[in-house]
Length: 221
Image (tube, rainbow, N blue to C red; front, side, top):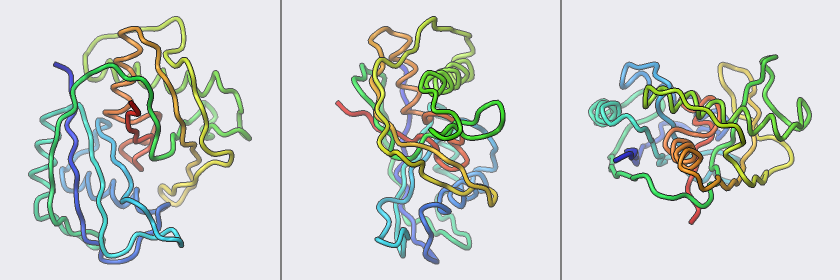
């Protein structure tokens, strides 16, 4: 049965972290703890920031992957983990198995790099069909990564999409700005479209999933 593991990781913060910068530091923590560079996981931000955009004292984030062995490694690596920014206080785990998905909304922005290395925005592109194609192509690559099988679709797997913000959100990675949008979308009902939607929830929508938690999503029943 296809499913992903979700860890809820509670941390103590050693200094305030702004929501735009926190994800990159979280990524460094995760990769350092597990000693990996794999593109097979995604994580949320630290919760709800204060009115100035900062997380202070404590935070909690969710970490997901379809790779069960990787998640077992994360549990071992994150127990008692501590660095200059974080101290892990406790971890809980749960599993989510494949089921029909009606709709999805992203909690973290969706970041999509185009051929010219610019991020897709309404200003840099504005082509909604290209936005969907970039998401779909990435999910097809993830499908092949996990299941070692190439598949294709003649039509978009998304039947409805809604952008939740007009101006892009900005996260910082390696001192550079990453621009992205929070979206709501409904996948089609055929099996492959549903599998791609499930992978989107398990591993993130779009790019930079393991770098800044790009496209971390939840299912909306």
